[in-house]
Image (cartoon, rainbow over all chains, first blue to last red; front, side, top):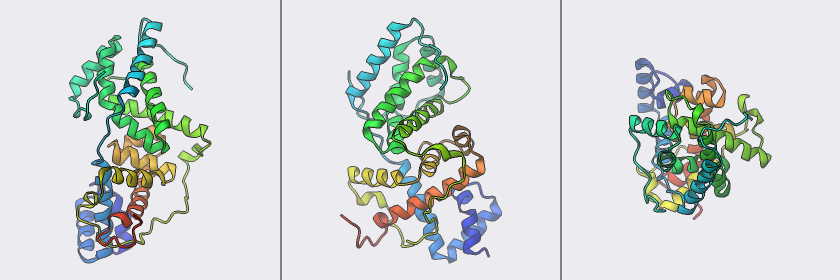
Length: 88
Length: 208
């Protein structure tokens, strides 16, 4: 059975689903017995999921309108939208 | 101009491509539709990157102005959103440089001195985000991600929040795939450590 240190080395791949079947089963067997490492997996998964499910806020209408006005002004300034700019 | 109260659902790819083609031909309303889809995400990205709402507004504006003027450079075989993210990340760098935040060491290994060895190993609440009001939760999450060192913050934002692949993230930040993986794990471990006191089952001692 793998130890906590080896578990840690595999944690990233495990969370991303990139661990092969054998490693995956090693990790799962380890966290079935090691409570601290189980908490690591559980809390990392929840951390990712909380950020992913964070509600997106619509931007203020006036900000969108200001941006549209700037774009319209740029369109009036040039016939084509594609206007090459020097790379920084 | 009326605003959508909720961000648009994820777009169908071919629908998006036709909007991009129309925008490249000079159709401003097609570009506006693309903008409406991605404004909230680009705004959040910029806010997480800079920790500032005012900077995020400027970055949002610059990102779309630049995208519009460089539309002819967009390769249609890549994702439009990834292309926008690249512009927004560059704009965020410029903004951070102006604030004299050190962004030069992005391609080097970093030692922030922050422990990634877990200290708080208490069980988390089964449904942690339900413990907080929406605005309070948003503040907790913004503060936690904002306190990560920039190289970790960027990798976490791109991989776990924006959903870019490891390879896309490596390409965008010009670092190696192993560097993305190792930074991502450190970022996740540091974040979970920072969030543990808010989301653990037993929340005694959490500042209100």
